[in-house]
Image (cartoon, rainbow, N blue to C red):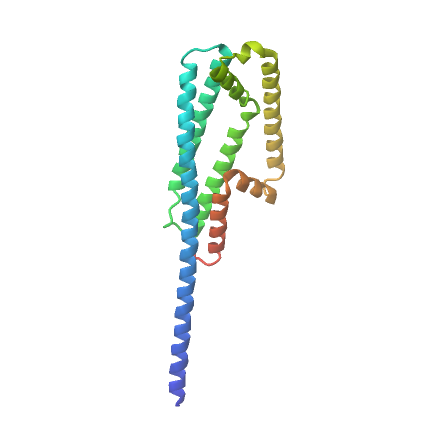
Length: 219
């Protein structure tokens, strides 16, 4: 075999290997992109289910305080009604932010948008969770009234007021501690883990897929 023939064979083999490597890399990227979209789709589905559930609860609570029941029952229904509206607004905002995250964007842009969505979701989850320090009192008040026609506001007013005050203090203390901790450790790995926990595993998994892509996809 002549040297030119060997050179041609080598170039052909090298090109074939490069083509296979490129094909394998593109297949890997495609799989990662589909995994990101699958996780974001599940996130949207969960937000949609929450939206429907809280909308139904908002209608129920609105029907209760509109009937002008005893004061404690009416205040409980109004508080839960307002909370449901807040959750609905938060879910709609998350879905809107999710729709802005397009697969046609670069990996860097998607990572930035996903990080913003995760921070927003974590913050709203924290803010929506804090009122339950005292909002849980509305549940037994409404259940007692609906099930047995008992007004806990009349039967257990001191207990309700003490629990409400304790819950408000606990909520204030949690806000102050969280604010102080974030200011002193803004880049802490624990902070990222807290954001992942509050924003949900779907966004955390999508972020992991984009992190894997960032090292192989041109910006």
